[in-house]
Length: 300
Image 1 (cartoon, one colour):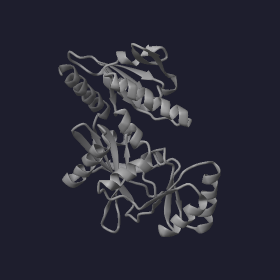
Image 2: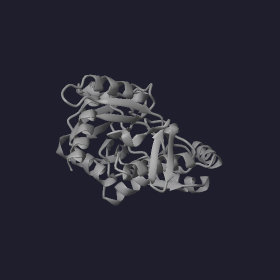
Image 3: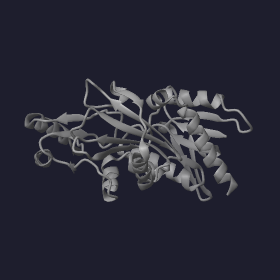
């Protein structure tokens, strides 16, 4: 099985996939190759379209796994998603599916779709001017979390609790042309839950951070194994189905009000902390899942 991985070649996750691929035994050896989003290109002819990366056709891979979603200009972001969509439509297995990736990397669109399906999400306001954001700040109770629409691992998150900081923050965001995305801060007991879903398998961790309200392990949070239980597992799977994802990390926050809030669904989930806490070889599980999808497609 030949897998192309859109990733940073030096990332821990690609190295972990390489390690897992080298340990595969049996009749189906696995070869993986790093691909650079910035090198994606297409060639259009009347006979069809070829999507390539550094002159190598991506159609030759059994599967293409998306392991990063780098920021870029609007044109770059649109082209990259369009190229993956064309690759997918031409019959190459892309995980996660391009349309699902488009939804999941957009916090506003993700939250909107989840809320429309009845999931409990933090009250959210999205606007474009600092004055509208100040009104939203008051509506949300004067304690909000400001997030970039595109981003992950806790980067760019800011808790705003004063009018002075709110005005400074919102004016700055308007000045640089950013959308202003605000969510009501949910009081909690200092931890959240990450459910990692890969196909029909799930793993859970409880994440806490004694020195920061953000629990992301990449920002110093601590992870320990957590039994999800049927309710949380069902919520996680339903969230993936809502967005059309095959593998994702689902972040849930138990509020002090007794509600379980669905914070985010990460379509390019990290697994380093989960693998360690749950003593599971997640990279091998990813390869097994891709293999099952490829075999299923080849048998049809």
